[in-house]
Length: 146
Image (cartoon, rainbow, N blue to C red; front, side, top):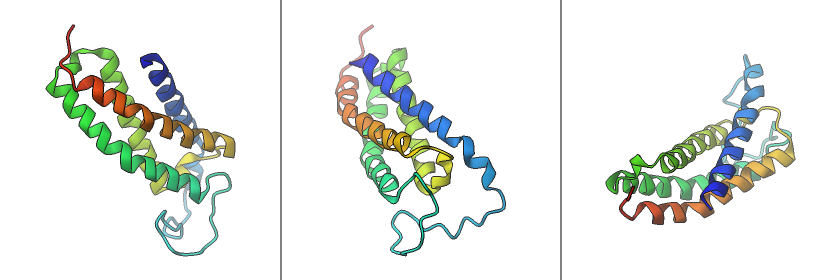
């Protein structure tokens, strides 16, 4: 189970990093014309393969994922899990994914030239990570024994 979680998190991280490749070509464009996720404006969405639904789905996952991460991180420190390299890597990966997700929700151009299929996979992987977080919280709730 741990290996599967780490693999999925690594895949999402790689997709997130790969998706950032097209962001540098946005120089000189006005950024204040892009409606936010919660905007009620009915303007044209300037992103071809990143839909409002993708952004909303990631935003919804982040709203649930971040408190679970914070709880897991606090419990890991409290119960000595910082001595377990795998758990530290899992927590660091989740933190990086939360950070990347926030940037992508804030500015969808951060996803660069991603295909719709890859964007669907990113959303799906965020949901998988969210589904795995209760197991991580349960694990770090117990005292770490070497």
